[in-house]
Length: 371
Image (cartoon, rainbow, N blue to C red; front, side, top):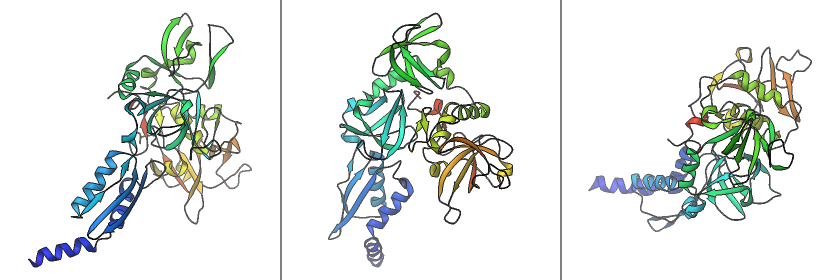
Protein backbone atom coordinates (compact mmCIF):
# COMPACT_ATOMS: atom_id res chain seq x y z
CA UNK A 1 0.00 0.00 0.00
CA UNK A 2 2.81 2.40 0.86
CA UNK A 3 4.49 1.54 -2.47
CA UNK A 4 1.32 2.43 -4.40
CA UNK A 5 1.08 5.81 -2.64
CA UNK A 6 4.74 6.56 -3.38
CA UNK A 7 4.28 5.75 -7.07
CA UNK A 8 1.21 7.97 -7.36
CA UNK A 9 3.04 10.85 -5.70
CA UNK A 10 5.96 10.46 -8.10
CA UNK A 11 3.65 10.48 -11.12
CA UNK A 12 1.76 13.64 -10.18
CA UNK A 13 4.88 15.48 -9.10
CA UNK A 14 5.95 15.20 -12.72
CA UNK A 15 5.53 18.36 -14.77
CA UNK A 16 3.67 16.99 -17.79
CA UNK A 17 4.62 20.02 -19.87
CA UNK A 18 8.29 19.40 -19.13
CA UNK A 19 7.81 15.73 -19.93
CA UNK A 20 6.53 16.61 -23.40
CA UNK A 21 9.17 19.31 -23.81
CA UNK A 22 11.83 16.67 -23.19
CA UNK A 23 10.12 14.39 -25.71
CA UNK A 24 10.14 17.18 -28.28
CA UNK A 25 13.86 17.70 -27.68
CA UNK A 26 14.42 14.03 -28.50
CA UNK A 27 12.21 13.54 -31.55
CA UNK A 28 11.39 17.01 -32.94
CA UNK A 29 14.08 19.47 -31.79
CA UNK A 30 14.33 21.48 -35.02
CA UNK A 31 11.25 23.40 -36.18
CA UNK A 32 12.73 23.58 -39.68
CA UNK A 33 12.14 19.85 -40.12
CA UNK A 34 9.36 19.02 -37.64
CA UNK A 35 6.02 20.53 -36.67
CA UNK A 36 5.36 20.36 -32.93
CA UNK A 37 3.21 23.00 -31.24
CA UNK A 38 1.89 21.29 -28.11
CA UNK A 39 0.58 22.81 -24.88
CA UNK A 40 -0.54 21.24 -21.61
CA UNK A 41 -3.10 22.27 -19.00
CA UNK A 42 -4.40 20.36 -16.00
CA UNK A 43 -8.03 19.53 -15.24
CA UNK A 44 -7.70 18.14 -11.74
CA UNK A 45 -5.53 15.06 -12.10
CA UNK A 46 -6.01 14.87 -15.86
CA UNK A 47 -3.54 16.45 -18.26
CA UNK A 48 -5.21 18.11 -21.25
CA UNK A 49 -2.90 18.04 -24.27
CA UNK A 50 -3.69 20.46 -27.11
CA UNK A 51 -1.90 21.60 -30.24
CA UNK A 52 -0.61 20.40 -33.59
CA UNK A 53 2.02 17.93 -34.81
CA UNK A 54 2.95 16.98 -38.34
CA UNK A 55 2.61 13.21 -38.39
CA UNK A 56 0.80 10.37 -36.66
CA UNK A 57 4.13 8.98 -35.44
CA UNK A 58 4.58 12.08 -33.29
CA UNK A 59 1.12 11.73 -31.77
CA UNK A 60 1.80 8.06 -31.07
CA UNK A 61 5.05 9.05 -29.34
CA UNK A 62 3.18 11.48 -27.07
CA UNK A 63 0.68 8.81 -26.09
CA UNK A 64 3.43 6.26 -25.47
CA UNK A 65 5.42 8.67 -23.30
CA UNK A 66 2.43 9.62 -21.17
CA UNK A 67 1.34 6.00 -20.85
CA UNK A 68 4.83 4.97 -19.77
CA UNK A 69 4.77 7.63 -17.05
CA UNK A 70 1.29 6.55 -15.88
CA UNK A 71 -0.15 9.99 -16.57
CA UNK A 72 -3.92 10.38 -16.84
CA UNK A 73 -4.53 12.54 -19.90
CA UNK A 74 -6.83 13.59 -22.69
CA UNK A 75 -5.02 14.08 -25.99
CA UNK A 76 -6.60 16.65 -28.31
CA UNK A 77 -3.51 17.11 -30.50
CA UNK A 78 -4.26 17.44 -34.22
CA UNK A 79 -2.16 15.66 -36.85
CA UNK A 80 -1.78 17.88 -39.91
CA UNK A 81 -0.94 15.13 -42.41
CA UNK A 82 -4.02 13.10 -41.49
CA UNK A 83 -6.31 15.94 -42.58
CA UNK A 84 -4.90 16.14 -46.12
CA UNK A 85 -7.11 14.38 -48.72
CA UNK A 86 -5.59 11.19 -50.16
CA UNK A 87 -5.48 12.82 -53.60
CA UNK A 88 -3.18 15.57 -52.29
CA UNK A 89 -0.93 13.84 -49.78
CA UNK A 90 2.02 13.92 -52.16
CA UNK A 91 3.14 16.35 -54.85
CA UNK A 92 5.80 16.79 -57.51
CA UNK A 93 7.27 20.20 -58.25
CA UNK A 94 6.07 21.03 -61.79
CA UNK A 95 8.22 24.12 -62.44
CA UNK A 96 11.94 24.14 -63.17
CA UNK A 97 12.30 25.99 -59.86
CA UNK A 98 9.66 26.61 -57.20
CA UNK A 99 10.15 29.05 -54.34
CA UNK A 100 9.31 27.78 -50.86
CA UNK A 101 8.77 30.34 -48.11
CA UNK A 102 8.79 30.42 -44.32
CA UNK A 103 5.19 31.70 -44.20
CA UNK A 104 2.29 31.43 -46.69
CA UNK A 105 2.87 34.76 -48.42
CA UNK A 106 4.81 36.01 -51.43
CA UNK A 107 6.36 38.66 -49.18
CA UNK A 108 7.63 36.09 -46.66
CA UNK A 109 11.26 35.07 -46.29
CA UNK A 110 12.47 32.47 -48.78
CA UNK A 111 13.22 29.19 -47.02
CA UNK A 112 14.43 27.01 -49.88
CA UNK A 113 13.69 26.03 -53.46
CA UNK A 114 12.24 22.92 -55.04
CA UNK A 115 13.11 21.80 -58.54
CA UNK A 116 11.04 20.01 -61.16
CA UNK A 117 10.33 16.41 -60.25
CA UNK A 118 11.22 16.83 -56.60
CA UNK A 119 8.76 14.75 -54.53
CA UNK A 120 7.13 16.55 -51.60
CA UNK A 121 5.01 15.31 -48.72
CA UNK A 122 2.02 17.60 -48.23
CA UNK A 123 1.06 18.66 -44.70
CA UNK A 124 -1.52 21.35 -45.47
CA UNK A 125 -3.38 22.28 -48.64
CA UNK A 126 -4.75 25.57 -49.89
CA UNK A 127 -3.57 28.47 -52.01
CA UNK A 128 -0.32 27.94 -50.12
CA UNK A 129 0.62 24.37 -49.24
CA UNK A 130 2.84 23.42 -46.35
CA UNK A 131 5.17 20.69 -47.58
CA UNK A 132 8.13 18.64 -46.47
CA UNK A 133 11.09 18.22 -48.81
CA UNK A 134 13.29 15.11 -49.25
CA UNK A 135 15.83 16.69 -46.88
CA UNK A 136 12.94 17.00 -44.34
CA UNK A 137 12.83 20.80 -44.58
CA UNK A 138 9.31 22.19 -44.10
CA UNK A 139 8.05 25.32 -45.87
CA UNK A 140 5.16 26.83 -47.82
CA UNK A 141 4.82 26.73 -51.61
CA UNK A 142 2.08 28.06 -53.92
CA UNK A 143 -0.38 25.37 -54.98
CA UNK A 144 0.22 26.50 -58.57
CA UNK A 145 3.80 25.17 -58.38
CA UNK A 146 2.69 21.61 -57.67
CA UNK A 147 1.25 18.54 -59.33
CA UNK A 148 -0.61 16.61 -56.63
CA UNK A 149 -0.40 12.82 -56.71
CA UNK A 150 -1.81 10.02 -54.61
CA UNK A 151 0.54 7.55 -52.96
CA UNK A 152 -0.33 5.06 -55.72
CA UNK A 153 0.47 7.64 -58.40
CA UNK A 154 3.74 8.45 -56.67
CA UNK A 155 4.68 4.76 -56.72
CA UNK A 156 3.80 4.65 -60.43
CA UNK A 157 6.09 7.66 -60.96
CA UNK A 158 8.87 5.85 -59.10
CA UNK A 159 8.57 2.94 -61.54
CA UNK A 160 8.31 5.13 -64.65
CA UNK A 161 11.15 5.69 -67.10
CA UNK A 162 12.48 9.02 -65.86
CA UNK A 163 15.32 11.22 -66.99
CA UNK A 164 17.29 13.81 -65.04
CA UNK A 165 18.80 16.98 -66.47
CA UNK A 166 22.58 16.76 -66.13
CA UNK A 167 23.59 20.10 -67.63
CA UNK A 168 23.68 23.43 -65.83
CA UNK A 169 20.55 24.70 -67.58
CA UNK A 170 18.53 24.06 -70.74
CA UNK A 171 15.08 24.40 -72.33
CA UNK A 172 12.32 22.01 -73.24
CA UNK A 173 11.18 23.06 -76.73
CA UNK A 174 8.10 22.27 -78.82
CA UNK A 175 10.01 20.38 -81.53
CA UNK A 176 13.55 19.12 -82.17
CA UNK A 177 15.81 22.08 -83.02
CA UNK A 178 12.85 24.39 -82.37
CA UNK A 179 13.03 27.64 -80.45
CA UNK A 180 9.60 27.83 -78.80
CA UNK A 181 9.95 27.05 -75.12
CA UNK A 182 7.74 24.66 -73.17
CA UNK A 183 9.73 25.10 -69.96
CA UNK A 184 13.13 26.21 -68.82
CA UNK A 185 15.18 23.49 -67.11
CA UNK A 186 17.96 23.36 -64.55
CA UNK A 187 20.38 20.73 -63.29
CA UNK A 188 18.52 18.03 -61.38
CA UNK A 189 15.08 18.44 -62.98
CA UNK A 190 13.33 15.07 -63.39
CA UNK A 191 10.95 14.33 -66.29
CA UNK A 192 9.30 11.24 -67.77
CA UNK A 193 10.16 9.92 -71.21
CA UNK A 194 7.61 10.06 -74.05
CA UNK A 195 9.71 8.96 -77.02
CA UNK A 196 13.11 9.30 -78.64
CA UNK A 197 14.04 10.60 -82.07
CA UNK A 198 17.67 10.43 -83.08
CA UNK A 199 19.70 12.77 -80.88
CA UNK A 200 16.53 14.21 -79.36
CA UNK A 201 14.23 12.95 -76.64
CA UNK A 202 10.64 13.94 -75.92
CA UNK A 203 9.96 14.39 -72.21
CA UNK A 204 6.95 15.18 -70.05
CA UNK A 205 6.89 17.50 -67.07
CA UNK A 206 5.05 16.32 -63.92
CA UNK A 207 1.94 18.23 -65.02
CA UNK A 208 1.93 16.64 -68.48
CA UNK A 209 3.51 19.32 -70.69
CA UNK A 210 5.69 17.72 -73.34
CA UNK A 211 8.67 18.97 -75.28
CA UNK A 212 12.02 18.05 -76.76
CA UNK A 213 15.55 18.15 -75.45
CA UNK A 214 18.90 16.96 -76.72
CA UNK A 215 19.35 13.44 -75.35
CA UNK A 216 22.96 14.19 -74.40
CA UNK A 217 21.76 16.67 -71.78
CA UNK A 218 19.83 14.13 -69.72
CA UNK A 219 20.49 10.70 -68.25
CA UNK A 220 18.20 7.89 -67.16
CA UNK A 221 17.43 8.59 -63.52
CA UNK A 222 17.96 5.02 -62.34
CA UNK A 223 21.37 4.90 -64.03
CA UNK A 224 22.35 8.39 -62.80
CA UNK A 225 21.36 7.42 -59.27
CA UNK A 226 23.79 4.50 -59.23
CA UNK A 227 26.83 6.79 -59.31
CA UNK A 228 29.11 6.76 -56.30
CA UNK A 229 30.69 9.80 -54.76
CA UNK A 230 32.91 11.69 -57.20
CA UNK A 231 34.59 14.66 -55.52
CA UNK A 232 35.83 16.10 -58.81
CA UNK A 233 32.28 16.11 -60.18
CA UNK A 234 31.06 17.94 -57.09
CA UNK A 235 33.88 20.46 -57.47
CA UNK A 236 33.08 20.90 -61.18
CA UNK A 237 29.44 21.74 -60.41
CA UNK A 238 30.45 24.30 -57.80
CA UNK A 239 32.98 25.92 -60.13
CA UNK A 240 30.38 26.01 -62.90
CA UNK A 241 28.46 28.44 -60.70
CA UNK A 242 31.40 30.82 -60.22
CA UNK A 243 30.29 34.44 -60.31
CA UNK A 244 26.58 33.72 -59.90
CA UNK A 245 24.82 35.91 -57.37
CA UNK A 246 23.68 35.15 -53.84
CA UNK A 247 20.02 34.68 -52.98
CA UNK A 248 18.89 33.82 -49.47
CA UNK A 249 17.02 30.52 -49.82
CA UNK A 250 18.41 29.69 -53.27
CA UNK A 251 19.10 26.01 -53.93
CA UNK A 252 19.27 25.75 -57.71
CA UNK A 253 21.86 26.35 -60.41
CA UNK A 254 20.20 29.66 -61.26
CA UNK A 255 20.99 31.18 -57.88
CA UNK A 256 22.01 29.93 -54.43
CA UNK A 257 22.85 30.88 -50.91
CA UNK A 258 25.91 29.38 -49.19
CA UNK A 259 24.35 26.08 -48.11
CA UNK A 260 22.42 25.96 -51.38
CA UNK A 261 25.68 25.93 -53.32
CA UNK A 262 26.83 22.97 -51.25
CA UNK A 263 23.50 21.14 -51.68
CA UNK A 264 23.37 21.67 -55.46
CA UNK A 265 26.98 20.56 -55.89
CA UNK A 266 26.45 17.34 -53.96
CA UNK A 267 23.05 16.67 -55.54
CA UNK A 268 24.71 16.68 -58.98
CA UNK A 269 26.51 13.59 -57.66
CA UNK A 270 23.27 11.99 -56.43
CA UNK A 271 23.69 12.96 -52.77
CA UNK A 272 21.11 14.78 -50.63
CA UNK A 273 22.47 16.97 -47.82
CA UNK A 274 20.64 18.96 -45.18
CA UNK A 275 19.26 22.36 -46.11
CA UNK A 276 20.97 24.89 -43.83
CA UNK A 277 24.62 25.34 -42.90
CA UNK A 278 23.87 24.87 -39.20
CA UNK A 279 22.17 21.55 -40.02
CA UNK A 280 24.97 20.42 -42.34
CA UNK A 281 27.47 21.18 -39.55
CA UNK A 282 25.89 18.43 -37.44
CA UNK A 283 26.57 15.79 -40.09
CA UNK A 284 29.60 14.00 -41.46
CA UNK A 285 33.00 13.16 -39.99
CA UNK A 286 34.62 15.96 -38.00
CA UNK A 287 38.05 17.15 -39.13
CA UNK A 288 40.04 19.11 -36.55
CA UNK A 289 42.35 21.22 -38.71
CA UNK A 290 41.85 22.70 -42.15
CA UNK A 291 45.36 21.59 -43.08
CA UNK A 292 43.92 18.05 -42.96
CA UNK A 293 40.92 18.94 -45.14
CA UNK A 294 40.31 17.10 -48.39
CA UNK A 295 38.51 18.04 -51.60
CA UNK A 296 34.83 18.94 -51.01
CA UNK A 297 34.95 18.76 -47.23
CA UNK A 298 32.45 21.23 -45.78
CA UNK A 299 33.92 24.28 -44.03
CA UNK A 300 31.70 26.02 -41.50
CA UNK A 301 32.08 29.62 -40.40
CA UNK A 302 30.37 31.84 -37.87
CA UNK A 303 30.68 33.26 -34.38
CA UNK A 304 33.79 31.88 -32.68
CA UNK A 305 32.53 32.91 -29.22
CA UNK A 306 29.12 31.25 -29.41
CA UNK A 307 29.97 28.56 -31.97
CA UNK A 308 26.92 29.57 -34.02
CA UNK A 309 27.31 28.49 -37.64
CA UNK A 310 26.18 31.04 -40.24
CA UNK A 311 28.11 30.13 -43.40
CA UNK A 312 29.50 27.13 -45.29
CA UNK A 313 31.86 26.51 -48.17
CA UNK A 314 33.50 23.62 -50.03
CA UNK A 315 37.20 22.99 -49.54
CA UNK A 316 39.19 22.77 -52.76
CA UNK A 317 42.92 22.29 -52.22
CA UNK A 318 45.98 24.18 -50.98
CA UNK A 319 43.91 26.22 -48.53
CA UNK A 320 41.42 27.39 -51.16
CA UNK A 321 37.67 27.02 -50.83
CA UNK A 322 34.64 27.93 -52.91
CA UNK A 323 31.56 29.50 -51.34
CA UNK A 324 28.66 31.85 -52.02
CA UNK A 325 29.02 35.15 -50.20
CA UNK A 326 27.65 37.97 -52.33
CA UNK A 327 28.54 35.75 -55.27
CA UNK A 328 30.10 32.34 -55.79
CA UNK A 329 33.83 32.87 -55.44
CA UNK A 330 37.08 31.31 -54.23
CA UNK A 331 38.93 32.47 -51.11
CA UNK A 332 41.80 31.26 -48.95
CA UNK A 333 41.93 29.92 -45.40
CA UNK A 334 45.51 31.04 -44.88
CA UNK A 335 45.46 34.35 -42.95
CA UNK A 336 48.60 35.45 -44.78
CA UNK A 337 47.07 34.98 -48.24
CA UNK A 338 45.85 38.10 -50.08
CA UNK A 339 42.45 36.51 -50.68
CA UNK A 340 42.05 35.25 -47.11
CA UNK A 341 38.48 35.35 -45.85
CA UNK A 342 37.25 33.73 -42.62
CA UNK A 343 38.63 30.95 -40.46
CA UNK A 344 36.47 27.85 -40.04
CA UNK A 345 34.68 26.95 -36.82
CA UNK A 346 34.45 23.31 -37.86
CA UNK A 347 34.93 20.97 -40.80
CA UNK A 348 32.81 18.00 -41.86
CA UNK A 349 33.76 15.27 -44.32
CA UNK A 350 30.92 13.81 -46.37
CA UNK A 351 33.07 11.30 -48.24
CA UNK A 352 32.79 7.96 -46.46
CA UNK A 353 29.79 9.11 -44.40
CA UNK A 354 26.92 8.67 -46.87
CA UNK A 355 24.11 6.83 -45.16
CA UNK A 356 24.76 8.46 -41.79
CA UNK A 357 22.47 11.09 -40.29
CA UNK A 358 21.54 13.85 -42.75
CA UNK A 359 23.44 12.39 -45.72
CA UNK A 360 21.70 10.08 -48.19
CA UNK A 361 22.06 8.91 -51.77
CA UNK A 362 19.05 9.69 -53.96
CA UNK A 363 18.95 5.99 -54.85
CA UNK A 364 18.38 5.14 -51.18
CA UNK A 365 15.64 7.72 -50.61
CA UNK A 366 12.24 6.04 -50.80
CA UNK A 367 10.54 9.21 -52.07
CA UNK A 368 12.48 8.80 -55.33
CA UNK A 369 12.70 5.03 -55.64
CA UNK A 370 10.36 2.27 -54.50
CA UNK A 371 11.95 0.13 -51.81
